[in-house]
Length: 213
Ligand SMILES: N[C@@H](CCC(=O)N[C@@H](CS)C(=O)NCC(=O)O)C(=O)O
Picture (cartoon, rainbow, N blue to C red):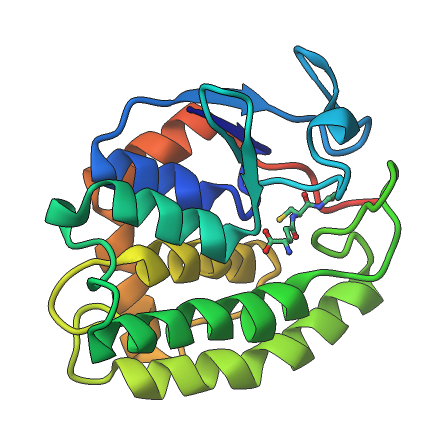
């Protein structure tokens, strides 16, 4: 399998999860400004023009972060990265994936154009970044409450939604969204940051794109 990624983008979540699952995979870096990768035109790989993309050995691809995370988790059910289909807890984990995707991830994404076909990621302007903080803060406040008394979103063990939420918290830091008023959330972020999978993924990806125009 190949994961198409950009440093620090939402692709960090499946990158972390592939490591948690202990699956073999290759990384393909995408330049989000030019939409090129070492194999050429990234838009030919994903006409939606965004990462993450997970490509199978036979060339089939999956897009959409929340779906890729489920797919990866289900390849190694013994790792417990998603509750089994049919269990009520499966739908609770899906509720988290959906909430993080629709309410947090999407609210971080700016309508500003950065280049390329459908270029949107974190805002590069002071006004845009402030607007992002206003949109995202109440959602993070909610997660802070929900995490009280638990180490991970699903309780006592790390699951796919944690890889996704952690990635969103790295964006919060990049946009100077102060997490310190949310003690539970900032402790959670440090707990996840200390996992070997997360340290390895961050080290391999290197520094993310600049947030200046
Ligand atoms: N709906 C997609 C959105 C993915 C997305 O927002 N990707 C961003 C980076 S985090 C991207 O590649 N944007 C294209 C660009 O910046 O040009 C998903 O959930 O995976």
